[in-house]
Length: 126
Image: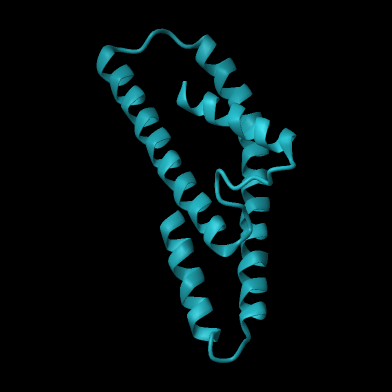
């Protein structure tokens, strides 16, 4: 679904490219991205409430057979991998659009930001 969103967005941009300036197109893309991020936050908050209900329901269930358990584990793993790929594509898109700085491009005088970036890299590589 995420790929469809990106393709639709680029179709819109290329459709209006002849009618709008670069700044107007950039504004459209930024506005769409902010809307998508807001929608994602709302879904995440709604998901947190659902997680509590699922945990309560899982605690009340009896152990599942092995084949059901393995299919659940595989489904969770595939979903996790798909989310990682989608997040990487989204990060790359934000860097290309200029809404996010490229990793490793930190101002020399901003030591706090540099330390935070190093800590984030260490966490991701562990």
